[in-house]
Picture 1 (cartoon, rainbow, N blue to C red):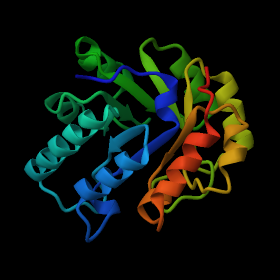
Picture 2: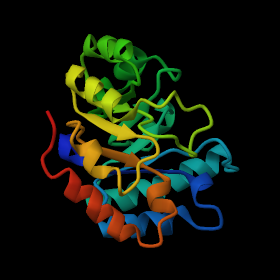
Picture 3: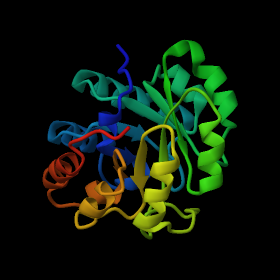
Length: 220
């Protein structure tokens, strides 16, 4: 059964693929994060990933089932075909990925929510003109090591401007640390999407509790 989107799902948004947890099984990592209370999970297997398409689909199916059992939305990054094959709850696309209108058209009858990356006022303005986008992912807020092709850093001031401009909830991405959570929350963002904050943390449970606590009130 799919999970219906609501802004509170963005509070503690975990993003990871096999390349982010070398030497570990992503299934085990996700199990730990689900038990600790993540509110959403995005399967982003790319870059240094060595999985074949078949292996990626098999892994995605297992991860989806784990999320379903925990009633946490399973979101696929970029790949509409895989999102449809896995009957994902959502899909997230970037400005350079498949055109957002095409993604919305492909998922319209599948009750799949769509997130879009926006890092500039112009991109948010364009997104505001498109019906059907559930949320925006905005950043990087701080320098990040997780994406080789990351956009320029926008900082919390830039994030606050995008949040104020956006018609839909915004989740902050890029270089998020525990220490930066209060400043990010003050921008009005609905939550944070993180990779290394959790995959490289000795006690991810502590980090997830902090993420959830920082964003107790869902944004618009």
